[in-house]
Image (tube, rainbow over all chains, first blue to last red; front, side, top):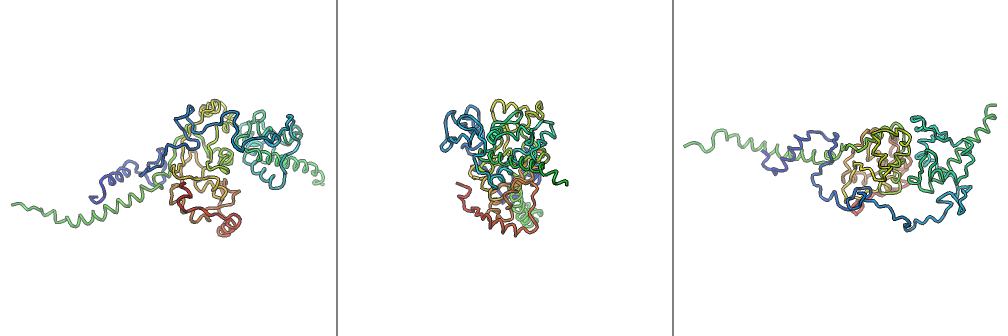
Length: 200
Length: 215
């Protein structure tokens, strides 16, 4: 019947009709079959892929210990660790905390901190709600007395149950978060101070 | 002597005419429908080694995409998070769950999970997440409503013509950069005003030449 189309093409069309028998968009756990795979899959190394060449099977390599990438030298102790050269926490944010910086901090806070510490910093986030995990409030005396450097250090290395957020948050953003947490604290304290006046 | 062509052969011209029209028409329709990435790729929903639910974590718990896919704004690759990210919560929540055993093992040993990639471009196409995010293309535009997916499913064909549709006229797919990860954002009634404003604030010139993506 389909004498005019090549037999293989007809067979493919018929087979897909019969075996797959499924309309566009229906779900399948089988990997897509491309009619012309061409050079879709190349043996080159791409990020986060597996690679049989290396012993751990991963394409991405970690830097050799003790090496520094070009431009990656972390000379500014205060900025990268929150500590001065003699190991003391820096007292204030090494970055200028202008409005844009605090706004950046608010965005980053919302992404990385708010899930647990909640949007207002009371420590009533999803981890507390769902798992009853004790989460620190930023408005307790202990944390109010932290220096900026100490806050930075906690974000970087974690504390108690909290893991360090060194990996997902770059240092500048960690300082922005410190600035925003300070804003949250100041805001709460100003409200508390004004509360009696407000109720009059 | 018997007839060379029995009487049944009288139908030959009409049968040939119908087959000649219907056959190619069916073949064309079949290729058009079944060879399209809308058929071959859309709906791919592999079973992952750990049944991570985006619906739970994004839809119900409200995690931002960037909590895990942190490099999406700065790198061409929207990273799959290290399992240490899972352990931020799962060292205390469901810490003994058997389903999470591979995650715990991976976090402890440092051997990465072998997640199965869902959205895959051909290796000769270079897509940059950071460029698209900073141009105000929402996650949902290409990935669909991830916050409603128990299992991540490919929702768009990720084909060249589909990419070019947007590259030729990106306006309707743009949104304020602050709303990029918002799964529930809907364009305002007056879309053209928004597009105009976005074009003023940050004009985009998506490439439509070959080397834009194939470099």
